[in-house]
Length: 207
View 1 (spheres, rainbow, N blue to C red):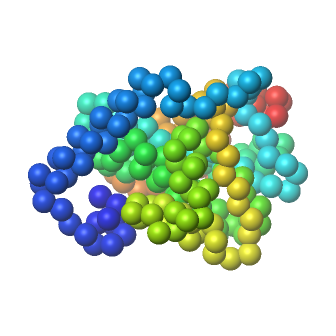
View 2: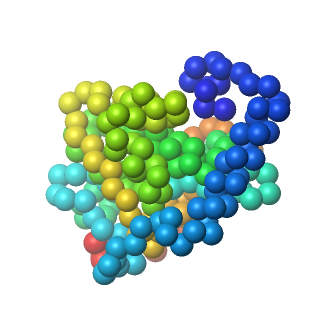
């Protein structure tokens, strides 16, 4: 799907089915393997705010078990925990890795237009973090990885990518659940949706 979007490549039905099956097996293995997600000693269960002068982008994605439909969510906050922008989107059938990369990519597209100079990206997907932090991945076979790295390198801004635990990424888990299954357009929130208000306040106090 990403090769089609970014490079116009098409695949035969058998190839698509085989690729989808491979991604499903990979996802199942990662879920069952308790060492797949790194653990940090002393990790707290609340969000950690960025340094003063930085904007934080928290991203998340999920793929439905039954039909493989993916949805993404992202939240931009300042150093005191105030919401700047939130977004969510239905991206169609995809994989567990690609949905996480989509959320980072969409977030970068949004924030570039706001003139942010320092951006901290937080994701609970360790594999996605490693891919977009690797400068050699500019030649990755995954188109989304290449365009993310190009966005990070383009212009006069500083970006950092950080892995966080799922407990620290609760806000985007709620956000991605607000995606509409009726269309594929990005939904943007310039003020907190009702579903996020209480958690935003709690995490701002604890930040």
